[in-house]
Image (cartoon, rainbow, N blue to C red; front, side, top):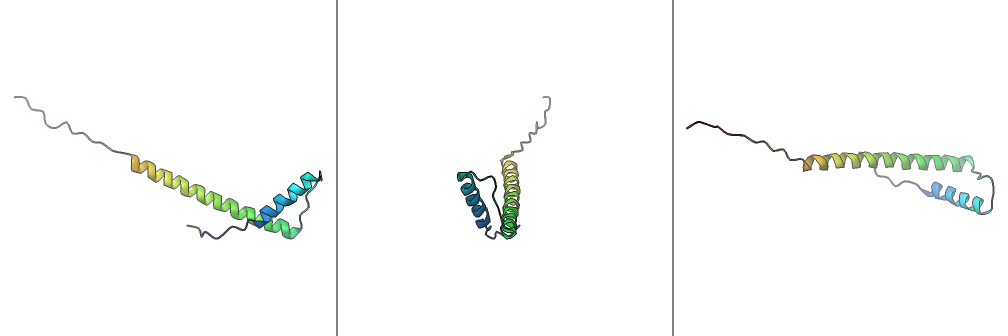
Amino acid sequence: MQSKNKIQTQPIEDFIAKHRVAKSKNQPTVVLTLREADALAQSLSQTMTRLVSIQEEIIETLKTAQQAQTVNVEMDGGNFSKK
């Protein structure tokens, strides 16, 4: 299982803030420095990786729960004899 280190979301928040400002000022572009773009890419990669990991854990948990709910019933008709 993957370690649960805290995801650095500050670059995502910074990008969203820059986008919000640009949109409010009707600017046609949002400019990021290479350092900001690298941090944003790293943060998005961490986030996406964590989401995939969580998704896989949920799927496995659902499979386990479904298997636990399955009940197998076997019936034996017994011996029928003529009297």
